[in-house]
Image 1 (cartoon, rainbow, N blue to C red):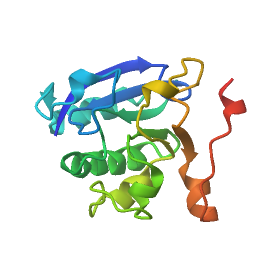
Image 2: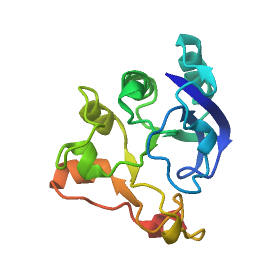
Image 3: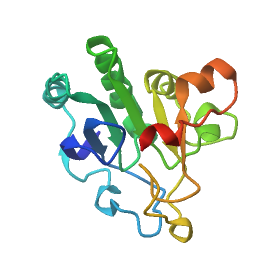
Image 4: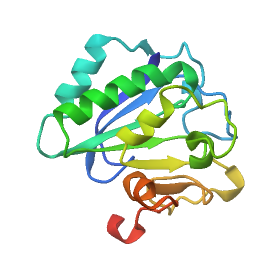
Length: 178
């Protein structure tokens, strides 16, 4: 896996002050994507053991609320092994920090309710390791810059723990983001 950028600090991609990893590689090719330079799987730098160590160190300060993983597309099959390992390490070292993950795939595609190329042996483990999923492709015609933490009105902010516990999609409360 390659990554295009690490933002530390980041306040745009999840609640609180965060560290954000932008992985490389995305086949969605959404019209007017904000991060088109990360579409290529060769973009950026190789994600290596030292990259993970640097991310874990960046998460250490108490004022850092957690990690956000964006893209590119974290759920491209080529990216899932490293994303899964990173989530395991984050949750082991920082169980109280939140993990937000962004995907152009919908929850239904990632969970296997609908067929998808995103389903791998790691997908369920990634969904279990993340706290919040921002799902769905960016749709230019539904763009709304007033939306917190997402770009178009079709995208949902899903509370993954509550969704797992209830067996239905539970959206993260928008009121808590004001």
